Length: 108
Image (tube, rainbow, N blue to C red; front, side):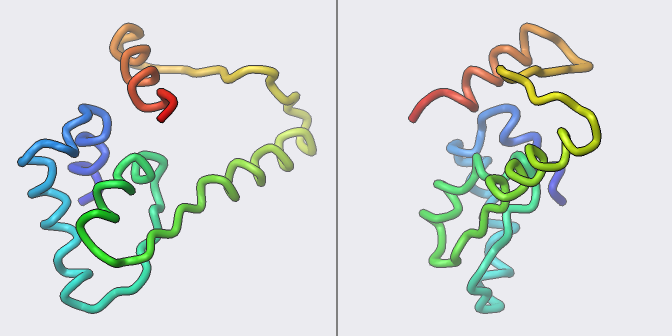
């Protein structure tokens, strides 16, 4: 299920008609069930928040800030020094990764 959504974020296609159809396919059952909250439980999903908000009145819960705070608290406790700047690793194409990072993390 989430593989479609992850791929969509990585490809930047959430604003295309195909991307919107995929989002609608996953969102519609929640709307039909009268869900009132949706937890964005994947690092990719906050990038879908603007589109999801535009498609429904479901309240989005983004735990990423809390997770980041917990990581910052726990890592030093287990001997991992804090980084002064982000450090990224990729097992894929470095150029493709650089493009994605710049696209996804660009200031709004």
